[in-house]
Length: 283
Length: 334
Image 1: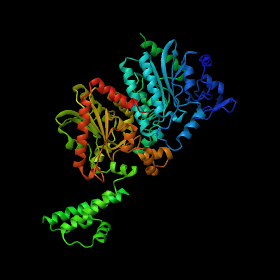
Image 2 (image 1 turned 90 degrees about the vertical axis):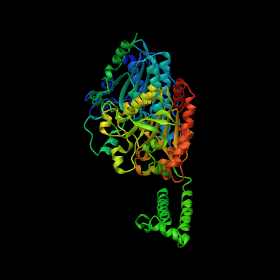
Image 3 (image 1 turned 60 degrees about the vertical axis):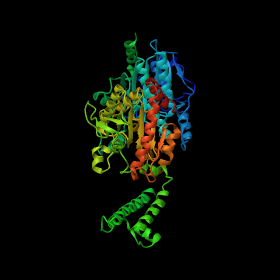
């Protein structure tokens, strides 16, 4: 898969796509320390393991384009609405500055990256929410990009895959953020009515308004191991019920056990699983 | 601050009531001093001197009440939040009593549980059978405990969906009343799929071929409000608020300090006027000065007119136009 990756062309602005593994200026680290277990491993080993800790198996956040590179056929990627930029509908204090900072940090224009491309020769539409940009929170542009990509998939009769990752609503966009839930859910429902296959892939963390709209409406729901998935955040729940939450609460495995996830899929199996499902649904 | 003004006004209300009874000779008892704040009585006598007879006294009190009420003509966003949450504000049962006839309550999601924080059923509005669904808050602590303060669990949303799906089946218009602090953030609620339940309601509501009108009557917070609010027309009572989150939660997320909620109210653009500008609300329904709790009749009359007019307008659309009209309302936002 590494070979595939190098053959893909990324937009030039996307410099540090591989998650929160920090690269110093022109100097890639030899070792990377795992945030969960604190152990160090060779960066090469991390890469070969798709940024899952080679020692403890903890899943590290990865960027949208890197994830796409692990899935799509070389050279097949075509980004949709790449120029849509985060805006500031409520003129919220300091929000524009924060957007600029996020943009600089990640090279992204918004938390959602929407593309069409091919998996094993099958054309698909993929939406990836990148948790590094404002925690993948739902802004009006995220909602708009998701809706347009879903509408594109409906029109072109293509399978739809959405990788969700979101801290919830974009507070600085208030009611505009909230209304994206209705907009995206309606687009998905129209897609469903047209008979399209929608695979919802939940990654760490998927919460709030994203969970309560398009992320929960898949025909097939997959999740990465250990991802936090829920509507209310664990801190809010603990404050409400005045109790500590049990170990593993709201994690992928917990959701699978409670009947909300079809399968937990390792990152190394991500592409093959998607391809299997697309083939099963192709006529 | 609106809370103090309202208390004064309420004290005057009480005094007028007692005096009116006295004037009619219905009671010889003195004013129940325990229920009248000393401060207000002093203020009243300072301004008007001593009373001579009941009628004049009542008149003076009414004048004074007017003065206080006029102070409440323009309210800050946080003051509207206070009114929107007022315990005596009309709630869904009051609206059903005031606007509809022939109400038949439908209980339960018919899957797992009966969630009392969602209330609904079938009724007639101007003779037309409709489905009514809404968040239920209580007027007392006991009632609120029973209704979980209007915070639904997934079962509540699934009950709402069951009722609304039937409305679609039988071609009944849907009227929903929104008044909730948000979806309940509890352990079971998460285990039973709070996110899935809300998502499903949003998806299905976008598909209905019947008129859907939502009325934001109190506070409408987060996806927990929107889950019964995907409508062709959104009506808002004048002092109702509608937002992404409670101002307290908003301040706590943004500044890690829920104490800054008043400041949050100002930034959140949550009043009916703000929502009208954002294209989320379509109609503002006027309330009496000092809030809906002061005169239910006034609110019911205005709401009845607004609901009837909008329902009649929507009934002119074909089923597929109704669906397209609703989807377009949200498609345009953002």
